[in-house]
Length: 92
Image 1 (cartoon, rainbow, N blue to C red):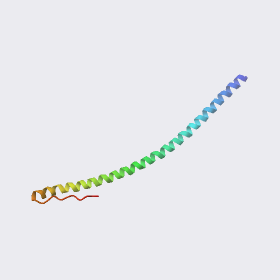
Image 2 (cartoon, rainbow, N blue to C red):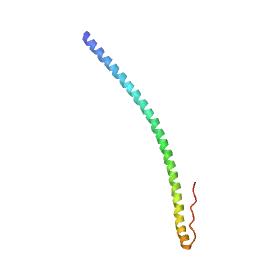
Image 3 (cartoon, rainbow, N blue to C red):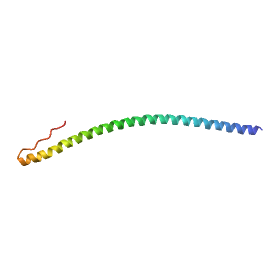
């Protein structure tokens, strides 16, 4: 009878340790998820700002390309008529 009680006590202690480890795992997992959420949301905001800046740069480049493309026929016509070609203005 004493042996059975001793064995049950060992198993209960083992289950207590296992439950403690499972609880700790859950706590660590929750903490990791929270930290990951913070890091990923920061990365998302950074990517959004970078995408907006890139879109602005792209629009500026497209506008400049249209402007320069419009000057090409004028420069070609001026060259044929003997006028010196217009120099593009710097955007800086």
